[in-house]
Length: 567
Image (cartoon, rainbow, N blue to C red; front, side, top):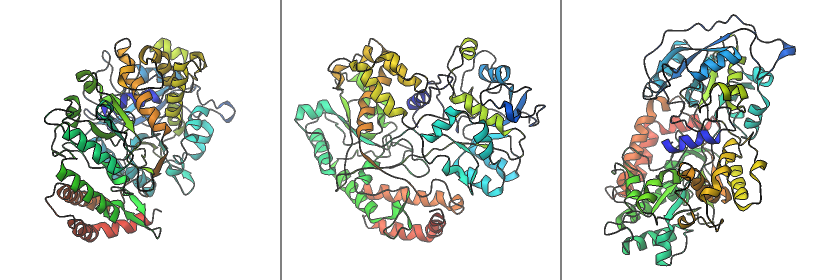
């Protein structure tokens, strides 16, 4: 997920007790520093009595929770604060008698390995963040606390409402009727086609619907040198990037080529069902071969950027004004600010396209990547539930007074992105209504959709009439510059996305199976290298068939059998 969007993602979670729209790091990867001394997981307190349960109440005596924690060494804390001892953790201690200790800390590159070592040695902290593969390992090893009753008893109504509005999340972490984790929520996403509409208008071209439309537009941009002598075709996938999102990284679709596959009903990188209802890896299907043949043809014609996978920064191609087409999610305007500053007439507009032959707009479905798990030996799992209650609650007046600043994932232990399932739609539609006067600012549900209130508070400073036209000339970029990108992203990108009818295809597997853990790296390398060679014309299209045979022989068939067991 891109850095600017992480800031947005946290903002959207909040109604959020801490107004945390300033996180620059995904909690699962926020790690750093040296290991700290192990802390005891024991506590001098007992759980509140049956009659006195208050999901937001203070424990009578201190309850200690020892964490495995990711810490970013580049993060700047206030004064002598640390990840373990900061304004937020002190607030937890003083206001709720929750004492946070770190059993260990790890750097971003080392966090996943540190978690895996803890699992393998069965030497677990009281709680930590894990990915789905690690979660399944821990469930199988019998290491986790069953949170079913404690969640039902101690979960605050707000927390339960968040999960209720995100259908399937809790079911996905429930095994044999037992709840074994607390998952993060996911912001909805699907890759749209972003185009310089000012170029479309100058050439008298219509917005695209089909792959053929897209090809015609890209060719017209190049033939007419809309970006100068070195006008580029469709840009995406820079050095180190992927051609498409996968079941292990389904989230953002920014600057890759997923839509070209989706428009051919191809879903490379995820696990789908074949005509007989059996699991098949999307990268091995005839539809994916067809998509690669199309991309090979477009690459040869210059419709696709000739430097696929080679550019150090595809964003630079947008900023320089050379490119007028890329694929990305609704929040892409956060990454278009430099392009607009360099080219004030750059009118980037999103389109729910290309459609497939049946006129359907397809996308794979994003899945969450972070889960809070609790050691089954920990005596007070209710403390973990209470920490999450506080994380998603409204900001208490005492906290406002005591803290008075926004918190990030580096201060907040066990940080998850959490938000109501309809938060984006509410943000877009409500901000539109406040802008047009259909709704008053004080009518915005500030308690449950705090970031929407912020958007609505600033929208009239930024969006000029006509209010329903989101072309760049109808925006004020100077009056309220700190909030321009937020409002521009939601009304320009968000409005198109929430109004689109997206056909989502979810991967059968969303984590690595047993055989994947030893063979997936090599299989993915084979896939990436073969596909790129086909697209660039280095290998013939029929090399795809050779790839499928090798993929199956080198572990693919065995992995497919394992995925079939997950259906």
